[in-house]
Amino acid sequence: MSGTRPIVLVGPPGAGKSTTGRLLAERLGVDFLDVDEYIEQRAGQTVAEIFTGEGEAAFRSWERDAVRRCLAERSGVLALGGGAVLADDTRGLLRGHTVVFLNVGMAEGVRRTGLSTARPLLAGLNPRATFKALLDARLPLYREVATVEIPTDRQGPSEVAAAVLAALAGDDTRVDASVQSDASAARTD
Ligand SMILES: Nc1ncnc2c1ncn2[C@@H]1O[C@H](COP(=O)(O)OP(=O)(O)OP(=O)(O)O)[C@@H](O)[C@H]1O
Ligand SMILES: O=C(O)C1=C[C@@H](O)[C@@H](O)[C@H](O)C1
Ligand SMILES: [Mg+2]
View 1: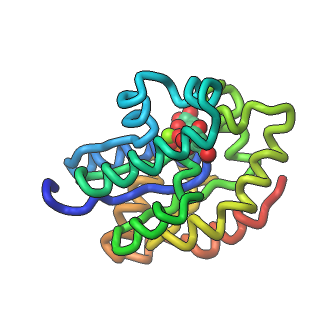
View 2: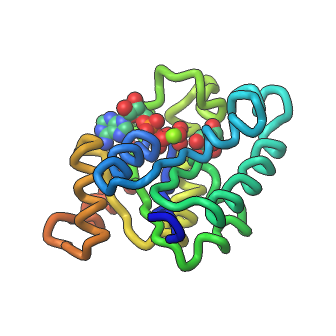
View 3: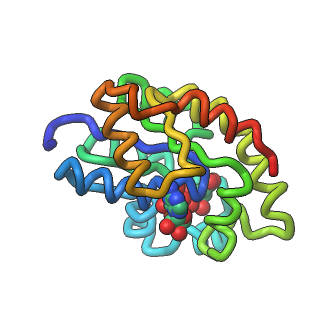
């Protein structure tokens, strides 16, 4: 897929951008790149270390620069960090790309991310409230940039990857994205 634009994955923490993204790339026979990992390599620190040592604003600056570079230079499947869409210029750069929004509701998102210490934004006392606030603020932004939306609450990574492939192939018989994602977006349990 060299020379072509990457397929970009966006969505909240725990939606499976890294996990499903790898599977998707494998099935397409293309490269996979996770922008969080790209930043960690360039910065020589983990995402959590950048948040702790330099603050969120500095991380967002690293992230904007990394996304711009990756969109220009990379092909295959590109997983963005969960908050990359917060940046206006990043959302602008995504226009014209195939952007897959992997959606996850609060309960399942918290369940998937709950045991990890690698996500500084969810490390507070009330991860459910934090996750809900994050979804409320970001759902419109994910939907602004997305060309395809796939719900992930009730299907594992392999099925999600298959649903993405089907959606990208225009086979809407296998993707009931709008119905399921509206339900999961509205859920607050
Ligand atoms: N569809 C799914 N069903 C069940 N578990 C899943 C699914 N997708 C991902 N997971 C699990 O949820 C956890 C988080 O997944 P992953 O790291 O891929 O999310 P992410 O979208 O990349 O999150 P982040 O934005 O924090 O990087 C992992 O343990 C992964 O195995
Ligand atoms: O949702 C977010 O804002 C984040 C998600 C992760 O992918 C990392 O980019 C970082 O932990 C911030
Ligand atoms: Mg990830």
